[in-house]
Amino acid sequence: MILLVLLASCRFEIPEQSRVCEDVATAIAHRVYVCTKDEDRGNAIWHAVTEGADCVAEKLDEDLYPTALEQGYQCVAALTALDCPAVTERGEDVAAWLATDERCARVMVAEGSAADSGGGTR
Image 1 (cartoon, rainbow, N blue to C red):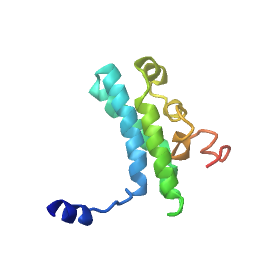
Image 2: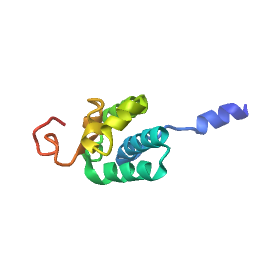
Image 3: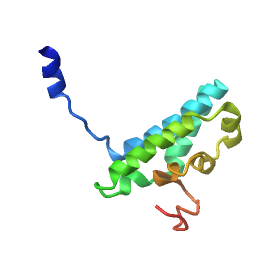
Image 4: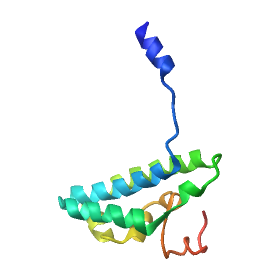
C-alpha cells in the first residue's frame, strides 16, 4: 500500500535545457580524469567545454527539446565509452570531443566550428 502511494506521487520531470550540455561536459571531464588521474585536467576540460561550446539544446523550442535530451544522453553514452587512447587523442580540443558522435553536435557546437558559423545543421 505504501509503495503504491509512493509510486503515485512520483512524476517524471524533464531537466532544464542547459542541463544536458552540462552533462556532456561532465562526461568529457570524467573520461579525462579516469584516463589521466589528473583532477586539474578534468576540471580544465569541463571549463573549456562549458565556456568554448554553444549549448544548442537550450535554444530549442520546447517541443523539440525532448529529442535533444535523448540525443544528449546518447552523446554522453558515446563519450563515456571512449577508451583512454581516444581520450588522449582528443586532448583539450573541444571540437574533437563534440565530433565523437553526431548526436553531440545536435546538443553542443564548439565555438568557431563550421556548425557554429552556420555551415552545419542544427
